[in-house]
Length: 194
Image (cartoon, rainbow, N blue to C red; front, side, top):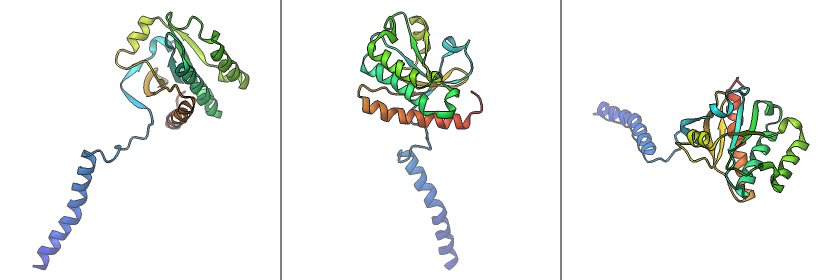
């Protein structure tokens, strides 16, 4: 009788945790070991048309809408701030804005954006934001599976892999840029390329 109790107790001790773990995972009590803050894109976005002729670097990409409002300004400011915060690793990351023929004619001619751009150029010349002009057709083709509104982290093979939201409120944008910085640092730590 004692042997049966010991066997049942042993099975209970080993089977109960497995059952509890299964219930916890199926009930979404945990985030299933996700460490990224941004939205993981599946499938990835092919940024080849924009960067195929450029050096293989990690990129922070923002596509400028037709009218650059407060959300747009905050996004451009955020990618510049993340790049500056990268410190000694800033040469491995390039902030990029993509404009189209329908975007603001000259994004940097906007008074607020010109101020942001001048401030970031005054910090150090290595922290300049690259500006890429693409046709609206190319942008629509690249973003056929995901909304274009966001800040994208692009790997050295020109694959957009993470998307972070943009915000109209400056404080929310600053908080979000900390999450972007965290994701980029993790990626750079794991990557030997770029």
